[in-house]
Length: 325
Image 1 (cartoon, rainbow, N blue to C red):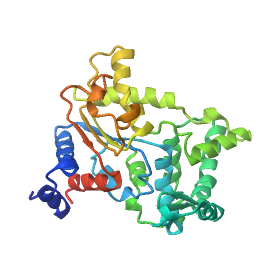
Image 2 (cartoon, helix red, strand yellow):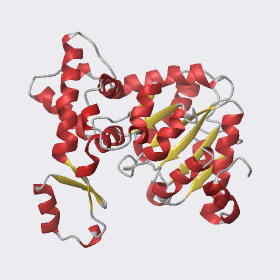
Image 3 (cartoon, helix red, strand yellow):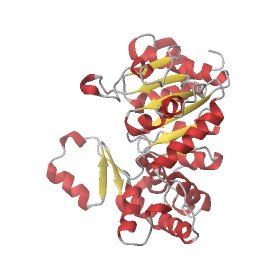
């Protein structure tokens, strides 16, 4: 434990059983995976950006402990929203007690609630909209097409948002990702605020849908990336939550192996999921890792971990261990 900080030492000393033991096992295996020269994908579901996961994930990116990210459109944009509008967020710890009228009052104030945290519409959504529309329109006028995250990278790298920064920039995982230009996959980006806004411009005839690259193009790009980076080792898969952020990218391996008939494609070589979803009613988000063997995603020998807990607690702890905190 000599090279580990106090948080890691506490975990190693006290986390001995049940979900806490799984947490430590998964962290140790993640570290071993990197030490063997393999790469790691992290997938972000839920509202991890609004939970300020960037405080640890950004450093993971800077230290090359994650090599590719799959995220929902919400997490893609909400990290930047927190970057530029943090002081306008409102925390409501008593959210369970709100009446429908109180919820309506929040709406009228332009406060969109995510559990105990309200995102300010004017300072967050509209501030990004104003800047990103110009980038979308410029690309379209030039006959160019990009992925959703590439437009976000352009916005961040242009510096147009710097005047609005309200947190230490080192705590923004999107800013860290843009600076290193690490690849991001954003399946179902249409299901996000910026996706809705883009669609509204298409409805008004101000933009063309083709200006935004599609989910199918994300999948074909990911197939090439996996082929180029997996070698014969495979890539690790660290899944935070469930949903499309994890479901979409994990399918690239069976697609390459079965549909493309590239039978030398290695399986994902590490798997961990943090989730409180159950396995009942056909839930894929709650499926135990062994089910993925039958779908050609994981090998019999792939190290597999599932931590049934709150990702806002577990993910920062695992990242702290990997960062030696």
